[in-house]
Length: 124
Image (cartoon, rainbow, N blue to C red; front, side):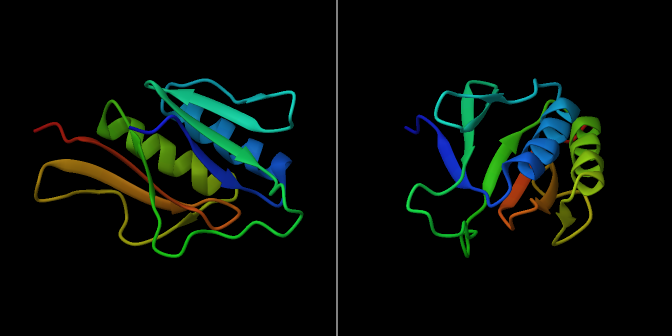
């Protein structure tokens, strides 16, 4: 259904440090800057793009919005959470944990306040 997710940033270098670290923790690659100045991350068939707003106004996060990212294992979820908090992210909601439905999840806000979640199936 979706071709990509685009989020805004007020500091692309800070966003690059955060997202490079968190995508590497998931086993992915660092982002690439395209000819229009957008950071692009490819992971498991999805595309996350980060840009400064084209209207010239400051970037703001979505109230009530969450971007969900797939991980291969609970170890990847924990590595993502650790990399994110070490690179300007803020841990939110509960610490990384297993949910009653068997999903292992973690939540962060990126340096611009965007809410992210990473989940995998827990190993039992």
